[in-house]
Length: 432
Image (cartoon, rainbow, N blue to C red; front, side, top):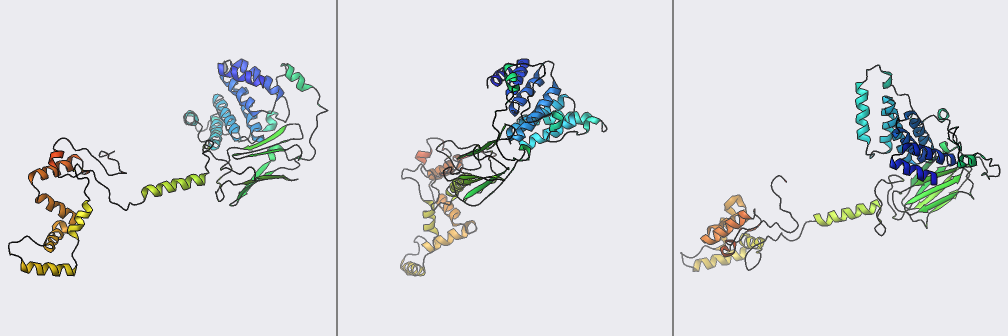
């Protein structure tokens, strides 16, 4: 609308008196727009000097009309403008009450913390018996006190414009829907679900079937129909909690309600609410919450599943990485009874100054380090190595923080051995 657009430009430019005028003219044409009241309330508060009482009245009218249209976001915005106006009027307990409503409707409102501190500081500074500590308002303003009615033009008496004059002309030829309907502020909704569908009901009587519009999209539902006074009732859900199959969904307009059956795109998805606060995936990347959860669990399972192979530690040996587990197993595996017997027979034929046999070496490994054969093996390997091999083992192990072990001094002696954790692991400093 041209007048509303001009009001928005004036508000953005800081020309608040012009914004008040343009939104007043816009309300002359559409007197039930909650957005116009919210914007005009903002302009009143920012004018010099501010008209806080007018700002409060506009904010409360915005609440009423936003509720009639079931627009949660607009209700929260109007309640915030109401909070600010009450604060400016030094009605601090009322401002605290209204701010609680804002928090209930939109916990992510970025100015909540600021206004909570401002209002809290003022309340703490008041004496215990100060009248400003008493709450005098309700969550929903009194329509009769504000003079709110459907179709009423909210324009000052001295204001004249082409739009207001046009609005004042009789409209006796306008068609009105038939049937007795539920008042807008009494319309309620209900819903339930099963594995396949979500069943939504808008509890309203006398909706004209030929003039109602129900639009079902994959992530939204909108319902609109004319009211007896000539206004339009709008109800929308966007974004829906999960995607639905619009082609399979259907609706029925009955005498006492409008029933919508939303076919779930992914059967078995459990809806926690009708709408979601999570961002909707881009086109081509749609995924329901259940799908997202299943993908997340699959990834966790795949990344945390134990590997069948031991981690391969880096090495500077020319022959490649050694399989230390296999080497240890070859030393620590106990021989069978047949092997022991064969070893015994062989020992009887050997000289007394021959090398120790395998079973003696195994016993040595098991007796060292409290029975830990791996530690015993590395100690034995180190003790029997030449000086260069020992230096290579110590240097590579210390400089790599225990992630590499090399016996090749010619390679290790060239420079520092960097930390090289096994695949799938990340090296961190202590305390990170």
